[in-house]
Image 1 (spheres, rainbow, N blue to C red):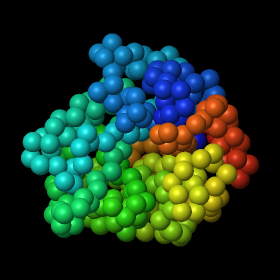
Image 2 (spheres, rainbow, N blue to C red):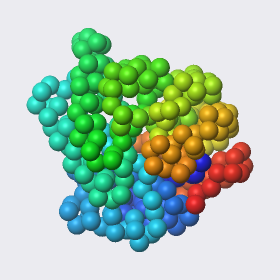
Image 3 (cartoon, rainbow, N blue to C red):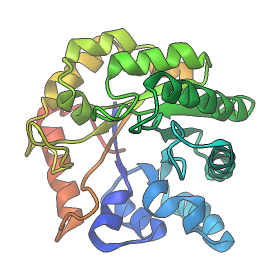
Length: 286
């Protein structure tokens, strides 16, 4: 397993551009990065020149982009036909952009159950939309990774609902991103990872208070990170992800949420890295 970082922490702290954030990640010694399309790396944020510059900077800095976080502009579980067409067009644009940067994995969530819409209908809208997204990427060697969000209003909010969504979408390139802090918030045990071991393509480190999604410095919250890492080793995750073309699983730091006051994002990353290397000395950033 390798350690990566999302670029979003520098945006949250300083409104840094994606290119500025790539330089910060490289300066801290990282090789693997997740590009945060929701905050500053989405198609809506970048001019044509900036899109080309991101690819050039990744190469110049020796960074390997492992994951692209990109959500639909409107909730796919409640979008009408016109909105859904815009959602699909935006994700297609983002997928093409990701592939131009050398990223073959796009992360999203299945959407939210909105008040007044029957849950089964919301679920089916999400299934239909995700099938279209997966079909667009199928011939391009690109995977779609769903991330469970630990809130009751999200359709996919734990491992069982993630497994059910994969079963209904029925696409070989539809996979799973596990956030270790989200597992803790949804009260899932390390052993629960066994049930989805074949689907895991990527992971995030996050840490939280027991009943609050805080994305604080890793090691300062209640997430039993060491136990989840032990479970990933037990299921031989590095061997399993080879089916996706990776030599090892990458787990990236997800730090901060919009509105946080982060006086020194580099320090947040360093402290998080120090904690992981204390509890898992075999993990590195190179």
